[in-house]
Length: 33
Picture 1 (cartoon, rainbow, N blue to C red):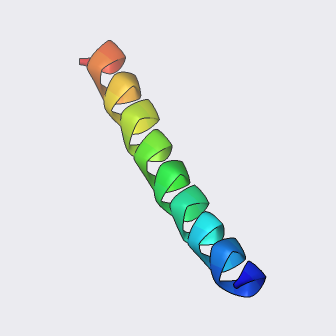
Picture 2: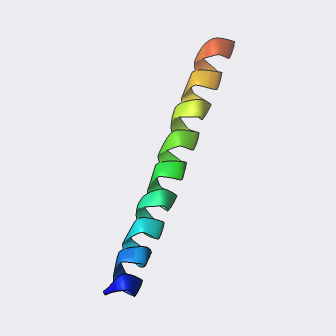
């Protein structure tokens, strides 16, 4: 159970990081345009 919870948290963190990078990239492109 603990291992499964940890894996789920790790996946959520990974998705969150990718999402944040997309937002930062979009903001960066917007400021340059």
